[in-house]
Image (cartoon, rainbow, N blue to C red; front, side, top):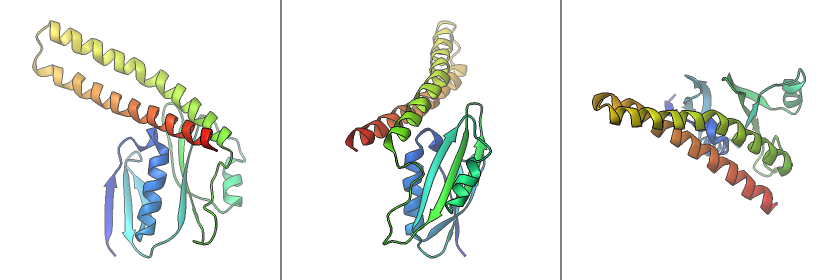
Length: 180
C-alpha cells in the first residue's frame, strides 16, 4: 500500500484549484485518506481510480442543519478547520462516470456571492499585513538592519502570494458566473 504526501500551502485561498487537484489524484488511483497539519499536507494511498467530486465550502457561521444537509445528499466531510475568519470544509461525494458531476452549489450567483465575500474578507485581512510588511522593510532599510530585513521581505512575499491567490480565485469564479 503505497502512501504519498503532498504539501499544498495556501490552497484555501484558491479553493477551486484544490478541488480539481484532488479529483485528478482520485482518477489516477491516489485516494485521499487524510488532510493534516493545518490543512496543508494531503495524504493519499495508491488504490483504485474513482470518480469522486471534491467541493470546498467556507463559512463564518454554520447553522445546526448545515452538516445534515450535505450528509442527507451523501456528501462525506473530509476536512474542517476553523481559522480566525472562517471555517473551511472539504466535502467528497463518489459518483459514476456516466453521471453528471455533483456540486454543492449549482447556482453560480450563490457561488459568485460567496467568492465576493471571500475576496472582501481576505482583502481586509491581508492588505494591512502587506502594508505593515512594506513599512517594516522601509524602516529596516533606513536603519541599516541588513540581516533582519530578510524576515519582513519573506513575509511580504508570502502575503503577496496569498493575496494573488485570493484575487485569482475571485476572478475565475466571476468569469465562470458571467459565462453561465
